Amino acid sequence: MSIIAEFSVPAEEFALYETMCEVPGMTVEVERVVAHEADCIVPYFWTSGEKYETFERVANDDPSVRDLTKLDEVRDANLYRAEWVEDVETVAYTMTRTGATLLDATGKDGRWTLQLRFDTSEGTTAFQRYLEENELEAELHRLYEPTQPRLDGQPGLTDIQHETLVIALERGYYNTPRDVSMSELAAELGISQQALSKRLRGGHHTLVENSLTIDPPNADDRGP
Image (cartoon, rainbow, N blue to C red; front, side, top):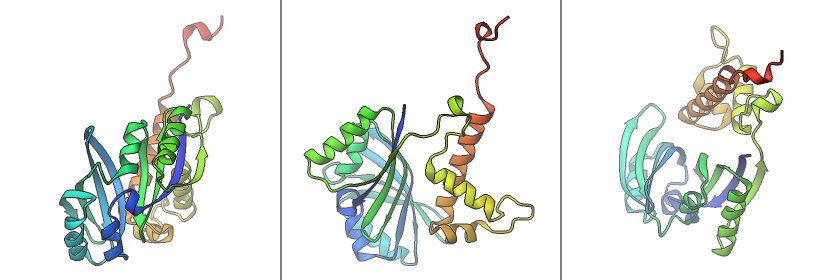
């Protein structure tokens, strides 16, 4: 049974602490993380705000990251790729050591909020034990099991996906024509359009996967 954990951690124990201090108005939202080697973790992340040139200048000197590269630029956000440095990014590397999958990460005002998935409860325990042993500050907000669709008929969404899809439905995002735009919905949720798009895609993928691809029963289970 997988476990979802929601934490908040200080930026100095995760990433881009110096950058967040010098550019406090920027919001960083991790799109995905790729672990190339044991000592090389590469995040792809969006930044939203108005001081992109300042962000890039400060981030290039931030000791927690290296090889910052801008990949894309849209109206209200930029997409970057970088490397997290192992001897600084303790919490980030704890995730890989304990088998955690990063579902969502948002950094703002010197603090990160993280949503992690662990394959087993033992992984969650190992993660928390590592944090305690290394005296890392992390505040656990929620710990829960995602819904199991084949057992109770529910779609298997995380709480963040569920909340986003419900609000989108209630605001008329799925109406034709739409009653609310993506930018308006993102503003209401306090996230960028890229983060909203990521949540919607993840929720839609989960709904389709768990609702339309359920394995048929075995012949032996069908009875006479």
